[in-house]
Length: 127
Image 1: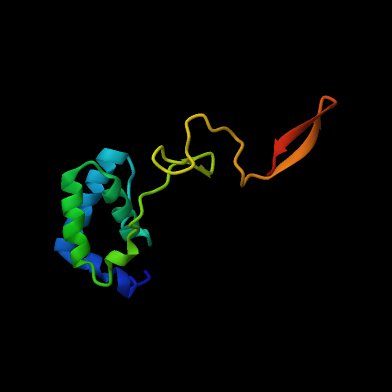
Image 2: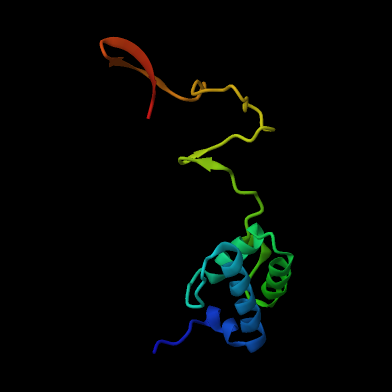
């Protein structure tokens, strides 16, 4: 059996492991996602779900746990809120400049090209 890498040895402490199990249980009950202890991105996933969670208990447990993880820095967390996406495109928030409710595909930054559709020349959005 391969040995656990040095950066994962913090999981061997019973008090930390208990906190991880509590986080995993709360994440599973809220999001329906089962996180595995063997996953290399476990701390990133715990941080991600704890930040998105509505559970104060999960956020408190995660804050206690991340203080005990050696080598875990707050800089590794994303400070920006996640941008809303729709079909791979970022959606402008209502308060942001350039976002109007009646705005259609006609952005100035979007390249246009001409196509022939059913014998008519039409402007089409570039890919």
